[in-house]
Image (cartoon, rainbow, N blue to C red; front, side, top):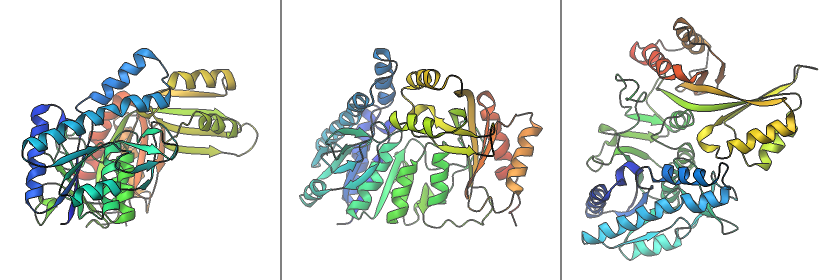
Length: 408
C-alpha cells in the first residue's frame, strides 16, 4: 500500500479527547488504503513548561541536559496516541526518534538530521501496523539524544516521508493552512492555496509558525509534497489545496508578487567593532547559530560585525552576555527590544520597488527602521518590537489587500 506520513502538532494532541480524535483520523486514513506513519509533537505547552522548569533550576541550562529533558514531551504523546489507536481496534507501535532511525549531527538543542535509517519503521509497516514516532528528536552519531529546534517535529515528518518514499506528508495543526499573515494580527489575512518550497522556507525563516524551515528544505530536496491542513479537516481530496495549503516545486504566482507577511517578535542583534574572527570563535565554542551575518571592512575604525539571533533558540543568553562583557570589554554587545517583519514572494527583489514601497509605508506610520535585509525571496525590516503588529498590518494592506503592482 502507498505510505502517508501525518504530523500532528501540540495543539492537536493537547488533551486526551484531542488525542482520541487524532486516533480516529489516523484510522480513517488507514481505512482509505494507506500505510500510515504518524509523527507527534509534545502535548499542548509541554515543551515550554519543561523549558521553564529547567530555567528555574539553572539560568543557563546545559544543552545536553536540556535535550534529555525536552525530548520527554514527545514520548508521552507517542505512547498515548498509540494506546488510543489500539482502543479503536488498530494495531500501533510507538518509536522514539532514535528507534525510528533519525540520525543527527552532534549539536544539542538545534541539531540537524543527516540521515534517516527507517528499517524498524518499514518492518512494522510490513506487519500492518501504524507507526507513531516522537517528533523533534533524534540521536547523534555519538549516540546522544538530540533535539531539532522549534518546529522540529515537521522536520521529522518530512525527513521520514522522504526516506520511506511516501505519497505525501500531511502537517496537521489547529489552523487550516498557511495564511498571508497571522490571522490573529491581521483579520483580513487569507489562506494561501499553493506555495513554492522557496516561499514557504522564507516564510518559516521569517517567523511564520505553520511549517518549519528545515522541513521544507528536506521536502524540496526530495520533491515531497507537503499538505498543511487542520486536524479537524476531512482527508485530502483530489485537490488538497481546496481546504489547506499545498507546498510544491512551483507555485502559480507571477514573479514580484508578495505571497505573505511574517514577523518574529523576539530577536537580538549582536553588534561588534573590529575583527569579527574572535567573536565568531566564541559563538562557535558556545554552539550558537545566528540567522543573518553582516560584516564590513572599509578601513581602520570602520570594520564591524552584525549578527541577528532568534531568542527562542538562545537558551543560555545570560552566559553569552557575561562572556561578551568579560572578553570584549564593550567592543561587542547585544541590542534588545527589536522585532523583524518580512514580506515574502518569488522575485520580489528583481528591482528595488518593493523595498522602497515597504520602507515608505513604515516611515509614513513613523515606524523607525533599525535595519533592512533582503534575499531573492524576502525583504526584512528590523523595527521596535512594540510596533511589530502594526507594521505587519500596514505591509499586508500595502502589498496584499491593495494588490501591489507586479515588479517589472
